[in-house]
Length: 360
Image (spheres, helix red, strand yellow):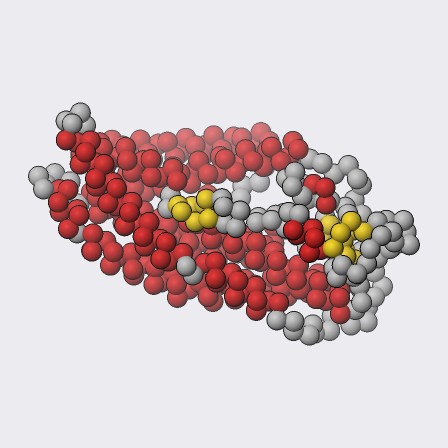
């Protein structure tokens, strides 16, 4: 019984939903502030004067988020670590190593370190979010004022166009270690999912190392990316001390630390590892490549991102009102129907959490 990569997504669900809800509410508040007094002759001046009111709303939303994040992180990491320990126990029992398989693991401090590292990623987001909302609001006001000065569009039409562009990206500006830019909710999901997967693997590692096992085999993850494909079905040494050929003829590819440096278990990685006992464990065949599956997975993610974009747009257009609000709702319905048809045609699961936006 190997660790299932998708378990990390399930364990990170609480954090993902917290940030998704906060993002949608923040965008809604921006649109509501823009829409207020839309017909007033001094609209632009009033908007810039009223930014403090928006900042107070943002502060309240972020305070709720800050209060909830530490507990959610601790719960996700704790559950993930224990799941890794339990999975290792099952594997050890199946291999005939029953002694101590389900005894309590001596704490290594690794789970606490993962909690601290995750919070170090997530807690600074509050400052970035506050600054991003203020910048977005001021940019929208300035751009709407500039476009309406030309007399070619109304203030409402200009607001709809600019907020529609904002909906495509959401609240952005969050960068990972590789320098990739993420929107707010996706960054939090990536951090939580990656940390949960890391905690599961750490719990698994701590259990089997206590019983003197040093080798593991990397899973075959369907629809894998090209970064991790070379590691599938390969044997790794947890400590780095086991090298070369094993007694069953298999070769240790690298240490776990080296494999990580070479890209295995990157953010949102779908791979895991399980116990490897030479001469006992049977790994997957060598031909594990699934480029067609990876292409389908990437297409699904694109379609899911589009639905999230349209949901954000519908939330904001609802505040502005008019024909654009009706169209945004219709576009969202059409995209959902198209996505459903595509899933059925390609036998894909409906992973609803990936398109979920909660708005008050």
